[in-house]
Length: 272
Ligand code: NAD
Image 1 (cartoon, rainbow, N blue to C red):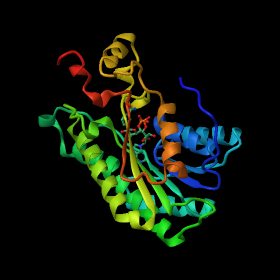
Image 2: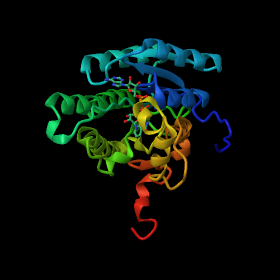
Image 3: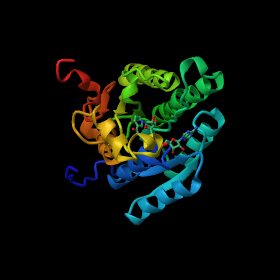
Image 4: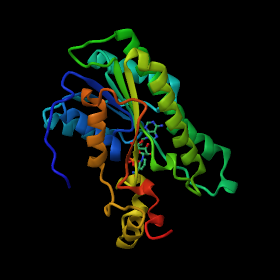
């Protein structure tokens, strides 16, 4: 893995990461805390995992709280934001990370499977972004903390642009996230709110365990990744710190693929 220099680029900022009890969200929460942010660690299930993330952040000298909410439920999202603001005063960074899959051949997909994935992966990002933007606008600019009014990072996927048979609900939700992100970046740019997305390729987490847990599965996965390794959560954590910090000021409406080249059509590398 590449070496990195610890920095405190998020000192004084407050961040909320959804779905932060597992996988990418847990790492993003820890990386933001290591960079100096106070962090809200959202969970909907497995509270003990969220408390473990909070404990790891505290053990490393950071500050975090666990926050319950199903991101697809308006009242629960609003209650979570009230709790976040009561604990930390405001919010500077939202990471819309919560997401899931309910896979099915399209002709067998139930409306419930379709709706559940859209509700969590897309409506969840709408509900959380709306609360964050309301708070950014209410609080106003605090130049000592950041040169932006606020930052939103949307966790999308390579399947925002790579079609994915058997996962039409997931791919459609991430396609929607891309347009939500760009529209918010356009609408709130004049307020100095930056909105970007991180689109991971294959990152080793519980969501895709079957794709990497055996050597055969990993070999097959690697044929899709020009850079020659499967991603790890730290790859995403580092990207999130950069997008959350003023180091990426002037970057908004951007889709950052962190995918080892998965979106480079590797099947065409030798004459197609
Ligand atoms: P994961 O299953 O480890 O984490 C997903 C998290 O979302 C879990 O903490 C889960 O509890 C939470 N969640 C699900 N429904 C929720 C709800 N209604 N309210 C609140 N939280 C909820 O998987 P991951 O790989 O860490 O996925 C994180 C994000 O990254 C997802 O949006 C996923 O689509 C995206 N992503 C992952 C990969 C990958 O290769 N791992 C690739 C592309 C995109």
